[in-house]
Amino acid sequence: MNKKTIFWRIALATITALVIAVTVIRNTGPKVGFVHRVSMIPHFDKLGHFFLMGLISMCAVVAFTSSSKPASLKRSLGIMSAVMALSLIEEFTQLAFPSRTFSYLDVTASVAGIFTLGMIGHLISRQISAPA
Image (cartoon, rainbow, N blue to C red; front, side):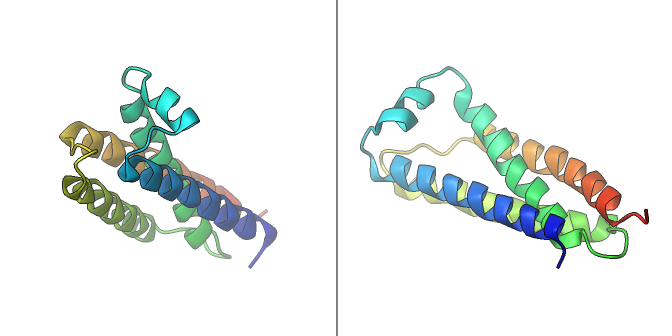
């Protein structure tokens, strides 16, 4: 494993931990400082879904496809699909929490971010694995 792969795996772990922390804070109900203030910005929730899930997808694609050979689109799409499945599970769990609301727009924003930034991750991965 090279330094670039390690960087992308650390980035993936960090962003995923951030998303989990925000999800737990939001699901437990209390209005916590920064998270509450940010959630009051109009449409920020949709942007958050797009960029946070998209960044997870991008980091996952680069972290798990940048090897010595060029990344295949099939492998990248598989990774994006796995991220999408986890995102859908997370969104549907909101149905179990009275303080949360399920939204098809959140799902749409997440899926758009996953595939948009995931494709950028695919291009980055191909650059990393390209012969010098």
